[in-house]
Image (tube, rainbow over all chains, first blue to last red; front, top):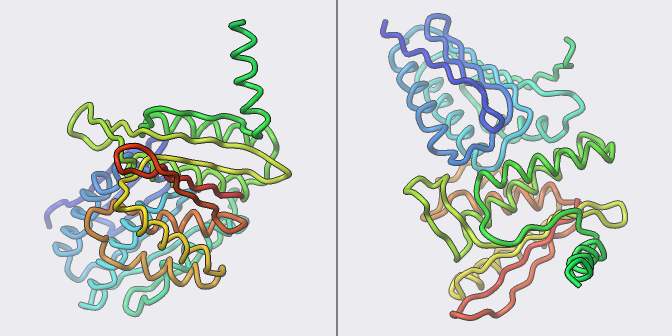
Length: 132
Length: 183
């Protein structure tokens, strides 16, 4: 299997991204209001799409832990989720976990907004306290 | 005289309940710095983190709207991130409410469309706003848009009262567009 892993370190305004091809996991965490959302998320989308295509039969677990993201990032994240939902429709096992601080109603609502219309991929809303 | 003049300028901002105001070229770098200042001032006031996040969100969307849609733009390089866009942004606190008030020139030809979009948004209740946001989230971006239509919805969702907006005729067949959000 080609190694399609990707690791991007967090900055003050862009999230940490880790695609672990061997283990079939993708995680993103932190804040996201990059200077140019398409320039930041484009390569991430590309890497995940390549990984999905190259890892037939392997399940993918996605863990999202955002503190804040702007509307351009929201569009990019939705775009990524739509691609994953399509892959799930084609038979891939995909689980998306949306973690949020139970006191953060904004991130909880956004999770609900993303979760709508998922039929093939599993989308879990997961409240998580910081010291858990 | 010099101090008197500058002090009255400072007093004018303070009379308008502005904690800071910036007029001139805005950039992504400046957004980050001003945004950090918004966060710090919310922290200083011991604002609830829920409120602080909403204020920050409105601030980012408002300033990015100026950067992307101001009719006065200069490019230091070809990268979008190096763009300089003319506008004015003020962050303030008045009667227990925070506000973000922004203005920038827009082409006269785009003003009417923007006005009707904002009138539509202003007429939506919370449930309708959210439904509309969910739809926009799933749509292919409009041509030439860098995400502005969903940005206005984000501002309206985070604001705690209907958005206020206005247009003022300026030279060059342009309008000066102002959007004020209370949180």
